[in-house]
Image (cartoon, helix red, strand yellow):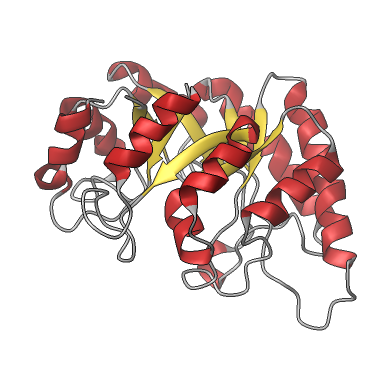
Length: 259
């Protein structure tokens, strides 16, 4: 069965962020991911990981002003210097935490932007991020996100993501495939896994449509986990879902499949 990483931004919200590491370890997780670590010093986060025997498998590069609605900088014109500074900052954290992969958020479509302009900028910024990350052995990820949860997000389908990956042409640029987003935007998950998995660097899960535990909803994760085994997926699966209640009360699925 696949290996599961708790997403500490969305799970264990009964506890302050520093205490979620202990809660995840006690629940049986051996790995964690989170959206952003930047409110805490790298040494602090590294200490929480070490104290509880956890590895960090993923976090996002700085997204701009998240509270104001920004959702990434990589495809935003005029923000190139800020994006590149964010690459440096993220890599500093990745080195301190031992994090092997970083997600680069594209940002939202700019109304009235010239056709192709944002895509060209996105490709250029991804090439820069991949070159910088390669010096530290870090993989860069891009993720299609559904436009119901994040209206106007620049990247929303697997085909678009893999076309951009190919255009960038960096061996350490892969796609982050969140099965929740993929089901909402496209469906046909089995076919897409068979087609794209060799170029996927990380998988995430949640129940569809409510983004709760993966043991309920329209996706049959028992089948999909068997398929991932069949296809030889050896990476982590991030549990990026909103628990229906207390996180610990909804982990029967984890006990079934093992952490």
